[in-house]
Amino acid sequence: MRVLVTGATGYIGTRLVPRLHEQGYSVRCFARAAHRLDGRFPAEVEIVEGSIDESATLEKALADCDVAYYLVHSMSSTTEFADADRRAAKAFGAAAKKARLKLIVYLGGLGDSRDGLSTHLQSRHEVGDLLRKSGVPVIEFRAAQIVGSGSISFEMMRYLTERLPVMIAPRWVLTRCQPIGVRDVLSYLIGALSRPLENRTYQIGGATIETYHGMMLRYAAMRGLRRRIFIVPFFTPKLSSYWVHLITPVPARLARPLIAGLYNEVVVRDGAAARDFPWIHPQTFEQALSLALDRSHSADRESTWFDAFAAQNPRGEFTGLREGMLVDRRQRIVRAPATRTAEIFSSLGGERGWLASDWLWRLRGWIDRIAGGSGLRRGRRSMKTLRVGDALDFWRVEAYDAGRMLRLRAEMLLPGRAWLQFETESLSSVRSTLVQTAFFEPRGLWGYLYWYAILPFHGIVFGRMIEEVVKAAERAP
Image: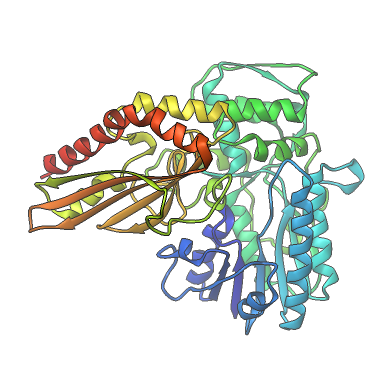
């Protein structure tokens, strides 16, 4: 059976692909930027590049496939994301029908349409309806919050509980929900391949029904933290999103539609999933939380919520030096092999920091956070490995050649575009060169003013950083 996975760079897709491959399925991934999947999956996994709303690339991706997982969705605080999801679902459904696809498996959102769902949850339901209208059988799973290391709902709860001994919380923390562990979600998605080819909608959830208030206190107890939560009536979704933006790594534009959906009760009211998937025994919230905590404190995670999101204002990738580009380049000879030098600069960011002037990096992160940017709190997915597309504090890995080169694209708010690049080359078995380059492409007068305003700090930040990378490489055995 040949299986197509859309949204393969996302939180669920990244975890689903290797599990399908392990079970013997022939897997093909469909991604807007194929290079972001380089080295992420086994070599046998096929990758097709294209956009979900381009019929030509969709036809190529769906050719000879039996089943497709539809894991694509937009996220925004405006209604524009619903229009984008609507267009994508219609295009995909039409292409799937033309390709004579046997089944579409779709992961949507839990909630009763009679309860006045948020725009976000309404859109999730509408996508399922549009896929079914294509005439291709659809198995739709509707889930509430997914509990797993790196999931957006888990990270929101983790940061709020870890950072705030006393919380002033809105009324939605008393809303009932039925969170589900990410492992159980993956089990349902894979289990769909053994079901009859017919339209079915399954409500899936964990073994326990919770409130957000209870989940945060349960998290605090598991971490040995004493926390007090006071509930007030005047927090709107917009105000709550700004608070979440300030305290957690989740930006307000993503937090707002999620928070609006938290006012809706999301519990399983149909036992069809338990009947048709009897081998799946969903975890309790505490079990899923315990696993998520274990993984979140490990040095390596499979995926995180920010894997799927490109720059807040993406403006294209690095295409080399161009007229008007400003450059800060520094070069050193390192008394260490090139592979060791590369190990050091590839480990920067996250908990390790940037080896020098960390207080300035944190200050820049706070300024960016207050201005509405991502700040430094995203950290990095793994302290051991890097891959193209990984977020790294307020950078994103744009190009990576293990042992030789790393290029980061800035995702902080800037009057222009910026990159930070490290390159190393072997001179002998015990010596190498290190070139560290900061590129800035200013946008108008403000861009030039910004560059020259921070120029005095370059010696402190970039100058000290390259020296510390050299020292760390030379200290190694």
